[in-house]
Length: 257
Image (cartoon, rainbow, N blue to C red; front, side):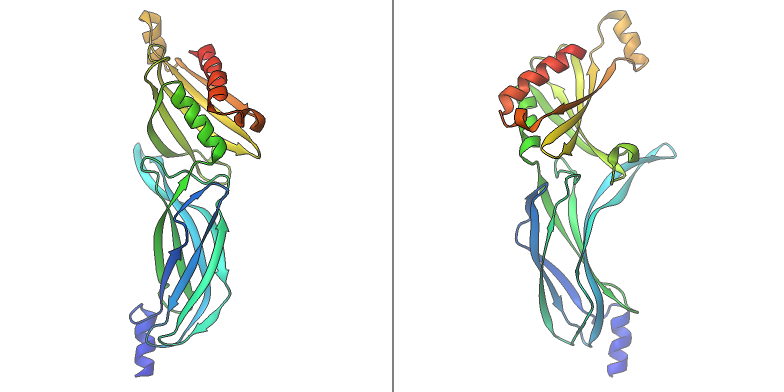
């Protein structure tokens, strides 16, 4: 009977289960995500080689003229070394990890989750998935508030394949805004990439000007109506608040619109 149970456990029937219980499902970039990994033994003892936790998300990549969704690993930690879990035994293993500076924000369908797995030799590895919400950190929120002051409304947030810009990730997170007041007659849209640089914040802006007259329509057709601007806001400026940053961004965007 014991041998039969082991055979079943090797294919995932009656084997150990994993459940991750988070202390905080909402966390900022650079903040700490913590919780407990609960292991519930199955019908027979099993050797757990390791427990690992991934932070994962999805991004869009164009392949053969089609947009396909890919899964990316943002971060990974090993929670514990190997151990033997007895039949019916329950174990709780605490963990914590720091959300890396380059992690994407959970906005407008940009989903982020943690995936917990048990590495069991000669058996199907059980996994558990829990969605988390990564919210903007202070400096990033200041810029988002500044854009709101300038009348820009967030239309879409996407993770787009761009390995050269993404650094440790194969994608960048793109924030697409539309003007509703001050720049409404000058711009079609504004796309922003955020890169945390210590206490400073680097922005990549794609400023899409509105077509004006025949030459404007020609420029739009030739895709020459866009300006790409790389801009760093020092931490000292960001700490002065959204109103101050809005003034600086207004001057910059006006220069290219």
